[in-house]
Image 1 (cartoon, rainbow, N blue to C red):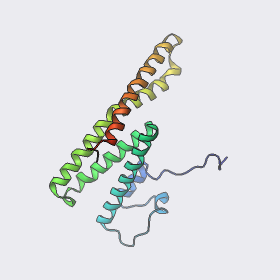
Image 2: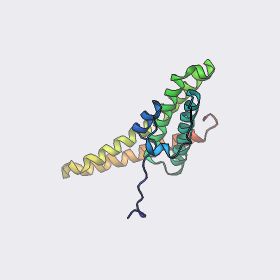
Image 3: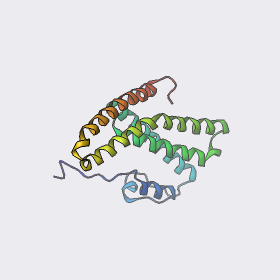
Image 4: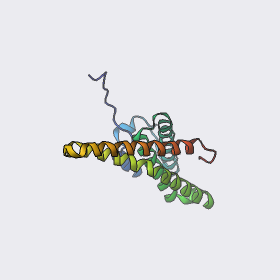
Length: 168
């Protein structure tokens, strides 16, 4: 069973993220990062920025590939965390660069919001469907089809945006 369904610990969950922010290393992360004898704030910042940029690239590729709902969620998480780093360390960048980065990361996240909201609505509908009376199942299926249609249109807009000339 383990070969058919291997268990791999998540390296970027909320606990691991919080531990890294305070300079601690969760055991799963410690094995994947080079050991630094005296980590600097600049080194830690560069590492976290690199982690989020890699996450953004991975999530974008998945969105363009199969449009997975989880990829949309992960992209928004990485964008939000990167925007927080930019805001928290504004003095690392030139003032106009920090402002530009923060504004563009926020705008990018807003462009993904409709798609994410549709994914959340579809998941909630799926969760509630078994609890609905039989008389409402047909209406629920119509709602599901409408959500799927709206999601397909929103995904097309996001994919076009990802391939556009103005994309970061």
